[in-house]
Image 1 (tube, rainbow over the protein chains, first blue to last red):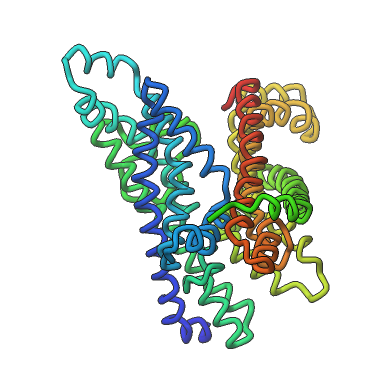
Image 2: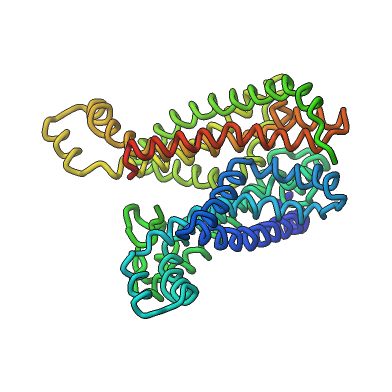
Length: 242
Length: 212
C-alpha cells in the first residue's frame, strides 16, 4: 500500500495521458461514426458503399496494426512524422469509429418508418427531419452500445505504449523496471484502469438517462440516483441497439 | 514511393508463418474462452460464489488485455512458452465476454422450460444438458462468432510478450530490409484477408440462427 501511495504521482501522470487518449480517440470516433453511420443509412448506393468500405476495412484491421502503420509507415509515405500521441489518437479513433458507424447505422434504421413518413408529409427537409426527428430517437438507441465502445477504446489505449506514448501502461513498466515490484506495479495500473472504466460507465448511464427522459421514456431500472449504479436488467427494450 | 512487389513475394513465407501463429493463438484461445465462459455463466447462478466471480470477471473485462498479458508474462517463471501464456490470457480475457453472452442466452430460456424440467424431476445435469443449454447456445451462436473475430484482431498484442506473430514478423522483416511501408501495409492486408470473409460467415450464421 505504501508503495502504491509513494508512486501515485507517477501513476496519475500516466493516467492523465490515458484519459487524454481516451477523450481524443472518442471524439474522433464519434464524429466518424456519425458521418459514416448516417451515410450508411441513406437510400442512394454511393454513400452506402463509401460507409461499407470504411466500416469493413477499419473494423478488420487491429488498432495496434493501424497504430504501427501510422507511426512507422506513414512518415515514409507522406514525409510527415505524426506526434506519437496524435498517431495513437487517430488510429484509435478510426478503428472504433468503424464500430460506431455500424451502431449509428443500425440505430437510424431502427427508427420507425412512420416517423420519416410524417416528416415528409410535413414537408420537412432531409436535414430537418434527421436533426429534429430521427437522430434524437436513434441517439437513445445507440448510447448503450456507445458506452461499451468507449470502454473498449479506453482499454485499447494501452497499446499506445508500444509506439512510445507514456501512458499508464508505460508508467507501470517504468515503475516495474525501477523497483522490481512486478505484482504491485501492474496491480496499481490495473486498478486505475478499472476506476477510469467505472467513471466512464457511470457517465454513459447519466447520458442514457437524459436521452431517454428527453424522449419521455422512463429509464430502465428506476429514476433514483442509486439506479445508476445497478447494471440495467437484461431484456429492457429501451435502448437495446440491434 | 513505389511498392516493391518482389520484396512482397520474397517475404510472403515469413508472413504466412506469422499468420499461422496468429491463427493458432486465436483458435486455442477461443476454445478456452468458449469452455470457460460457459462454466462461468453457470457458476454465476450460484448465490455468493457467483457474485465473487462476477466481480472478478468485471475487473478483467474493464482492464486492458495488453496490461494483463504483460503482467502474467512477468509473473510466470522463465522458460514458459510465451505463446502458451498468450493463449491462456487471451482465453481467460475473452471468457469474461463469452460468459455474458452465454448468460443472456440462458436468461432467454423461458421459465416454463425450467419448471417443466423440475416437474419431471430431472437431475441438474439433464436440466442443463438436455433442456437449457441446447436452447440457450443456439441463440447466441452469432454473438459468440463475433468474439472470434474480435479475438483474432487482438492477437497482435502478443507481440508485447515476444510471441513472433504476424505483426512481430513484419517489424523484424521491415527493420532488416528498410521496407517498412510494405511490411506494415502487408500486415493490414492479411488481416483484412481473414477478417472480412469471417465477417461474412458470421452474417450468414446470424441469418440462420435468429439472434436473441
